[in-house]
Length: 401
Image 1 (cartoon, helix red, strand yellow):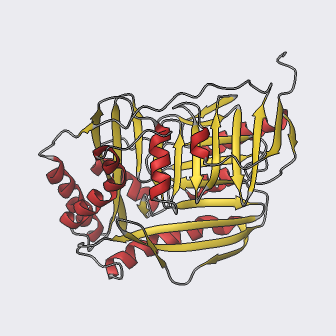
Image 2 (cartoon, rainbow, N blue to C red):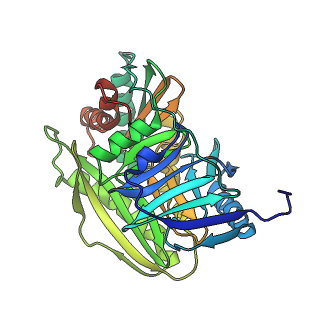
Image 3 (cartoon, one colour):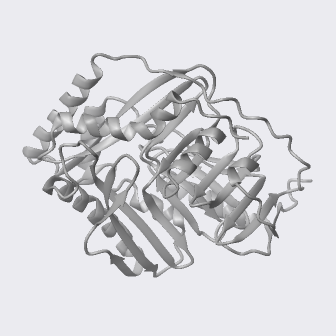
C-alpha cells in the first residue's frame, strides 16, 4: 500500500464473543472493561506521542487528523466502534503521553458486539498463554512512614498558613517480581473483583479505578467525582467534616471546568456513597449537555488536574506537590481511556494502578490533605488504597485460561 493510499477501517457486527479479557492474544494487548462490557485490542496501527503542557490538545488534534485521513466503514456506529485511540497521559507536563491506535479491536456495549480492523485484516494471531501470577518482594523502607508523615504534616502547616486549601499527596512503593506480570491476568482478576470500577491495561499501566473523569456520548457527558474516604477501622467516618471539605473542593473544580462547554450542567446536590470492597468514597455525579462539538479528550484535558488529584487552588497546590512529594508521579492520577473518531469516549483517572516495568512493579496511592488531616490516618488510607493491587501478588492466582 502506498503512503498516499487512505487507510481503511472496517467495523462489523459479530456474535457475542464471551469474556473480553480471554480474547487478548498477548501481554501487550489493550483492555478496557466495565461491568462485563468494554474493549479489547491488539496490534498497533499508529502511535501518537505528545509532551508538555499542551499534550492533550496536541494529541486530540493529531488523532482527529489521523481519523479524517482514514476511510471508515462502520456498520455499528456506537461509542467505541470505528477507529479508536487508547490514551495514557502523564500527570505533569514532563514525560511522554501517548495515544495508541490498535489494528484489531473487539467491543461489546449494551448487548451489541463488534470487531474493528485497521488496514488489511490480519490472519489469526496465535494466543500466548499468560504466565502464572508472579510473586512480589516488597523491600522494607524503614524511613517511608516517617517521610510520608512529615510531608503530610508540612502540607497541613502550609494549608493552615493560607497557602492552599487542599493538597493531594501521593506515595509510591516498588516491588521486585519473580517474573514479568501479565496485564491480561491482572486486568481479568481486577475486573472480576471490582466490576463497578473501570479496569484498564493501556500501554504498560494496569489498574481498576473507580473515578470516571468524563464520558461523552454524542452531546451528553457524565463525570463521577470522588474525594473523601473511610474504611472499616479507620479513624475518620465518611460523614466527617474533613471528608466533606475535601470532597467539596473536588466536586466544585470539576463543575467549574465543565461549565464553559455545557448548555446544561447538573451536579448532584449531595454526594452519594460509593462502596468498594475495602473502602467507601464520597461521590458526586455530574451530567450535562454540550453546547459545542468538543471531544471527550479535550474535556479530559480541560478537567485535569481536578482538585481530586491536585488540590485547590490548582497552581499553588501543584507547586506544593512538587516540593513535598519529591518523586515523579508518571501517569498515576492522570487521564487514561479511549476516544473514537466521533469524539465519543471514556476517560478515567488512573488510580489503584500499577506501572509494569519488566520485573519491577510500581504502585501508587494518594490522599487529599486539608487543614484537619492527621498524618497517621493519611498513611493508613494509602495502605488501604494499595491493597487492591498489592494483594494480587500475595495470592496464588491462576493464569488467565
